[in-house]
Amino acid sequence: MWNMKSTMLFVASLVAVIVISISMANADDKVKPSDFVNSVANVPSAVSNHVKNEWVEIKEYQANSFAEMKTKWPWNQIFKSKNDTQN
Image 1 (spheres, one colour):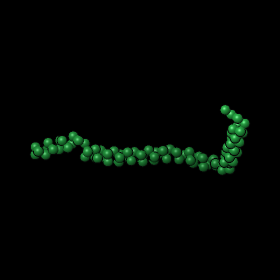
Image 2 (tube, rainbow, N blue to C red):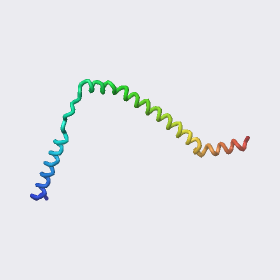
Image 3 (cartoon, rainbow, N blue to C red):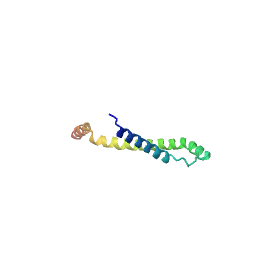
Image 4 (spheres, rainbow, N blue to C red):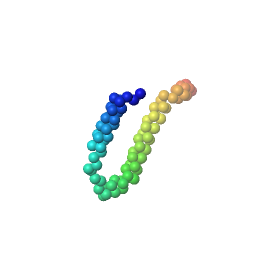
C-alpha cells in the first residue's frame, strides 16, 4: 500500500505544509490592552443594537407576509363572495 515513493511524497508535502503554516503564522501585530478593553466594553452595546435591528426587521417581515397572506388565503375569497352577495 505505502511504497517508498508515496511515503517520500507524503513526507515532503507534510514538510511543505508545516513550513508554509509557520511562515503565515507570523504574529507581529500586538494587541494593546486599551484596545482590548475598549472592544470588550463595546460588546454589550453591539449585541443590543444587533438584537434591536433584527427585531425591527422581523416585525417588518411579519407585517408584509401577513398582508400578503390575507390576499392569498383561499377562505377570504369564499367569505368575501358570500358577504358581497348578501349586501
